[in-house]
Length: 357
Image (tube, rainbow, N blue to C red; front, top):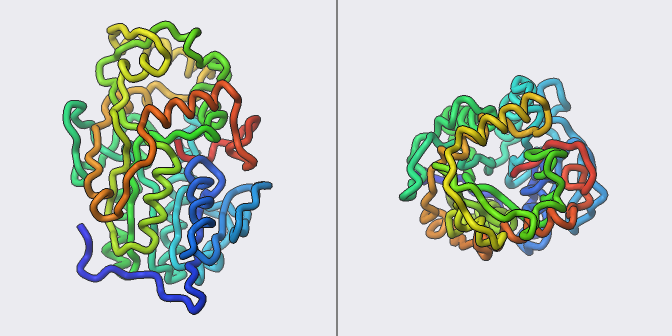
């Protein structure tokens, strides 16, 4: 999966790499920027986002920019970079998929074209487990599993389409080393408020997500997915900046999360339940705009395959520091506390919808 000749960032006189992070203020972006700022191999970080945050990590400068068509020219911002990490994503509004397509697909295409025009040698793109076609829950699949997504859900449809764009891009621009990260669901304490707004909305106050208020967890057919601490995913992005790798990398921590695991987190019991009644309720709530997450995304989650992360371990030297249970416990504690961070998407009270789950 690695090309015969893999372009590398050029050596700088001061030994410090210049990295641009597009979508730098959300769940993944804040973890990536923090780890880049802590790395002695990195000389400077340019964080691009729709709104400049108050957060001021070391070695980092900020620039407000809109990646959508009609936005500012991205080439001058990327010129001179050793690597571009593209994380920007819009989750809402799910009722208007043409709007998210405008940002996520057309905006990402602008970023890809700007990387080539600015002669940046490395492009690291945030794909997702959601790019994968429906797959098994009783075994894992590697990065060769088809990436056609679940066509009914905008999120998975857009992630899969960008995989096709990058297939063509790699042929057209062999001088760019392209890395595609395909993580499972990403959680950390600071992302709790944002993710509640994006997926649950006002119908599920964070303070209600606690053990004594959740006596049972429904065991739905297909409810088995992989989760990962956001900081662990960020470590894989950092490794890919300088390691001579390309192609796709699955990222996930164990164990796979199912009703039994969730019940253990909440000290609750699990019970078997068909998915149809819950989907009907979710669909009604979505149509009434009581919850922002669409029933199509619910369908996609029940169909996601489990991923084999051997390639990330062997080629990136990557190993998650947190289990999936630890990541979820931290996230649920953040929900109860109304946790956030001093960036517009992660603020405890915000209407922003640009960040990775």
